[in-house]
Image (tube, rainbow, N blue to C red):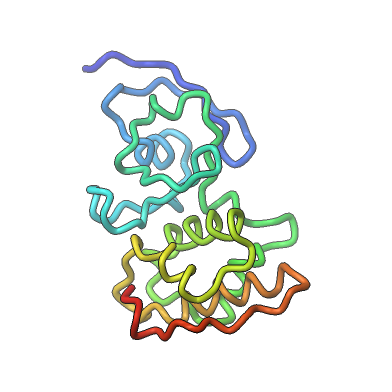
Length: 173
């Protein structure tokens, strides 16, 4: 058995501690030690984006990050997006725009989109597509996901969303 290392991570605003093997990924720690199974494991190579979480506000592939690397960090998972009243604005918009189908990729897209909207509250369609380009979905065809992010951006600002001048055919997601 490998040596156990004590870590403390603030997850969704709550300090959590665990003794973990140095080789365990953050995704495994979140799922197995903290019971937060919303973070999905797809490829386990950092390619699909299903395991995306926010670490100190920045999107990170939790399948590539070791749990011990998160010691002292502030981690937000998909479970941390909900408000006291239910789904977040982004989650509601994705639901309304049918951005979810099988749902496997959903947590990663939500976390990546959350980071985008925190950094750029008024993204164009091109900027949304670019930000989400590292996440893979086999079901939706992406347009409904992009539409959901744009709707969330519009509903959280008083500024009307500018029409994007880049056609969808110019950006492959």
